[in-house]
Image (cartoon, rainbow, N blue to C red; front, side, top):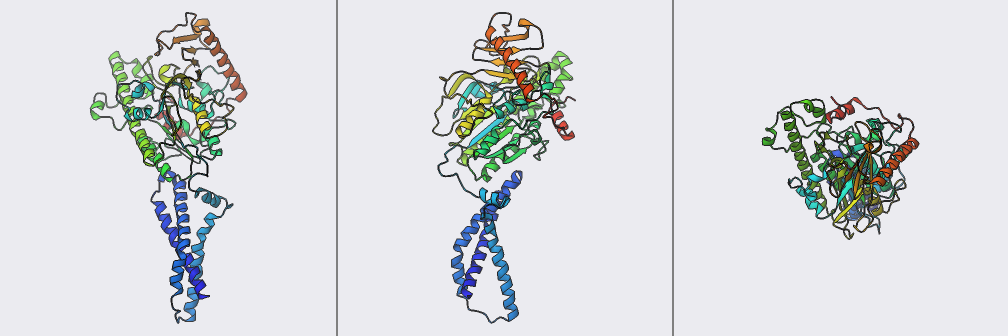
Length: 558
């Protein structure tokens, strides 16, 4: 009996010591940005170490059983019995972590599973979106500025899509199209029969009857996480659906609301990769740089010194002041914005490069699908204005799209066909062997031999609404509430006029496409009427803090 007690005591002691040592080891990877995941990781490590301690306990039990019994008093013996009982209780308590069906404790056990299920060879999925990133500022797309060495190196590993276009010229509607595989009107963000940007009110949120990419990936067995920076991607707008872990560094979900920069996002993304032990996974990172105001902390002082110290490269500074200033001051401010934007691009590239190096260091690069793109571009006085959301021209709809396929997947190095950015979701879902999203199953073409696509875009944030259609040959911009006949259209020949300087609307060019775009626009109105006929549906109450952050980005004016 004494020998049995010794072995039981050893079992409990070894398990308890193993658990605490394992917990401490797991705690070394603690990340404040992911508190719940950090706790799970520490407890999981402790639970595994507890099992190891239990396995080694017979040796300790043998040592204890060889001890000679002492001649302790009865009171001391009673105290030892109580102490032994407490030790056994504590030492065996971690066993509860391995019991199924106990609510959150059962989830802890589920999280403790290491690696993939047998036979699961699906790739990890990493989506990196860079806010307001123009394609023509990347070396991979022909820029000679030398701003993006990391993205250019990544492009050499990836398929470069030369003609990828966004569905909308601002964040909420563009990324909603990506995550639903539907145009903004189909995604539930368009209120019908409105002529202006009231269609896409600042209070809009994603309706629950439209499935999201993240939800389908989660149901398919992917661990899902997002760390983002943009006030339009806050959790109360519906973006958390389908994510196991979600942060918005520029909103209430994060703690970095006034300094939501690329460094924070990269460090948090790498911390999640270190903590995540369940595979396969889907990680989405949205970098706010180079969104205005342009204020890279790496901007050389010599460059800053060229311009007035009080200048801030925000949209409202231009539209509410400098636009009416003397021509010399206007020219200086335009150059200031272009220089500061370029520094933001350089800064974002630096930290995206750090993320990519982190993926390689963790052995997660080769077997992963990694997509790098932008939600929209940026107008830098190409047509007299700055910012985005004001037009549907090349500089705001053309986005970089680089796709590094998992090892063993063959694709062309460059795809020249026009492709919609919203086809990204179908690509991820096909590789994840998940169902189609909202009835759409289009994926990005992997070969130039595949059929070309067209891109329908809509949703100005400011001014009278317009729509656009981009094909390999033509770009059509439709002004349904302005003018009549040919005056309602802008027509550009993309083969000879990619910068869209020569409007061919007065000719018969692309007459069939004009009718097609008109029909698409009318269909979008009908779809919006079916989705919601009440402009209050899908709206949220914007907090004072959210308004402050929206104002800091220039969305609400002064």
